[in-house]
Amino acid sequence: MGPNQHYREKAARAERRADDPRHAAGMRAELRAAARRWRHLAEQADWLARRSRYSEV
Image (cartoon, rainbow, N blue to C red; front, side, top):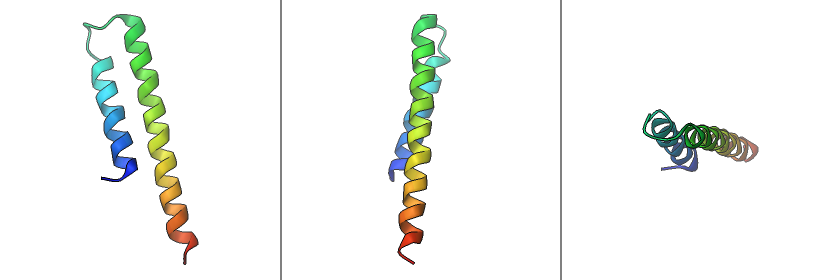
């Protein structure tokens, strides 16, 4: 599993937990923010992988 997929799975897990109504509203907001950060890291990892792959050519 590459870093891109790892970060996307972590984002999905945080989103599922944020959708759980048993958590307080503040905690759900924190979980959504964490999911946004994980998705951003996934995009960065994908960009870096593509950049390093094509810079060798």
